[in-house]
Length: 199
Image 1 (cartoon, rainbow, N blue to C red):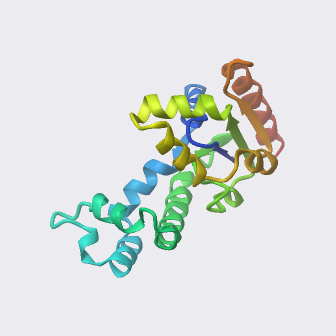
Image 2 (cartoon, rainbow, N blue to C red):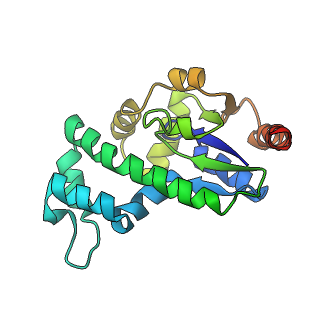
């Protein structure tokens, strides 16, 4: 089984593209979803969060106090880096555990917004970046998340530059008005099946 990573900046459509792969029967690991789960299930991570931010990190019923954590890392790059240093390894462990169940499939897909930023691309055999023009991405995010254009720009600025992701990735999917996504996915799917068969 080969492991394919898929990433892209906010509003690029990486989750939508991942769902197309899923429709083809490809198991998909969603790192953002896993990050939320490990924050309430991974004992090592939970202990680290309490050490970092205090017992207020969790409510009495064991639910993560998201507002409290957000207040600690908002506009504080150092604290955000510390949080990520705890969360990313827990997500790596979750991915490894998840992948065991799919050892017999040709390939799996790991969808992660911060794949290159977190170095999780090193756990993948190949990587895909989903790209779209900045203005198109901003419009998508504003419409989806009901935020201002400035807030969307600020979120995008916290991610690695798209050009750098293109340089680092093995494959690229254009998610704009110039090309249809499904034919690009089908072409890559066939390539990955061949790569898996030859491994």
